Length: 448
Image (cartoon, rainbow, N blue to C red):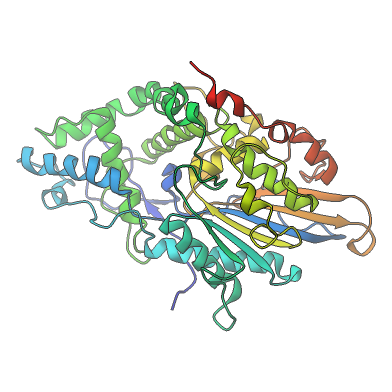
């Protein structure tokens, strides 16, 4: 039986001049998008304000913790550690375990931790919105880990004693991930974004930071793994083993890889990943926000109860059918990937205050106005969009909209948000002109 997720605590080492086997202090991990779900402290209270009543709740969620993708495992990790085993004859202190280390053979699927994260996520959603009933409508993008995440979420939401929504039920829609099939939960269809210069922007923009942050780490690794001759990018792949091995079993200690690096080095790793997502899929990519426009227009339809108006990534067949896109529910749950969620956040303008991320120095999430991949799109990361009515008895007055990302209230931009980060529904919809006008969708097919 699935049980409540135990908080995963990473053991990170002191700044190392050389390898060590001593125990390290505990600290919440900063593993970029590979960070397990953590509730982010909110400067604005996340509780429902006194005198207000919630009338609508939607969650857009990333899948739970997973094994490495097959492409990375077979194309990068396995060759790297095969090279280390064959070329290194003497391992430095603390690195001896690498003599026998091989990356996990499983790929792509949810780990045990990932399943528990999603059960807990369903429970959290139920606790917050239980007064809105149980008429939850679920959509999941078609990859196995996303579908399984949705199923684990519904298990947590409904509880073991109640009938669960299962794949194939009327209230559980799986949207295929395949070329030519419009799916707002999986970015595709924009040729210039998928195949043009924009496709490489995330990788190129984080290279200056990689050369600054990873160079001394590479030198230390190569001193302790003589003959390996690790490159900068292989240094990142080496560090990837810490999160991927640590998110498999929530009851196991952190991977031995984790204590090979200092907390400051892990912050640098997290920033490297944050740059990649920001310039790859978010505000920093000229076409990044456009990939989230379709989903935002679906959100507007759900908030207002009016048909979807969009010409980008929405599926008109699904969105025009009340069986596959109902507009009369109070509760919705959508399940997607981190990359697409970054584009949705950008289309909503959630991190417009962040500005441009510097390429040669690290900004903390606080200094970046709440943005980092660990804070925005960790494993099982989620956005709540809620409506509330406020006034005498929680009724009357304009409906207000509020957004939380991983339990942190994100003050809405461009719509005259109040001190609690909320805007009126009408002002919020008006502020989404970029999405309502299709973003830069025409640029997706402009000839170079």
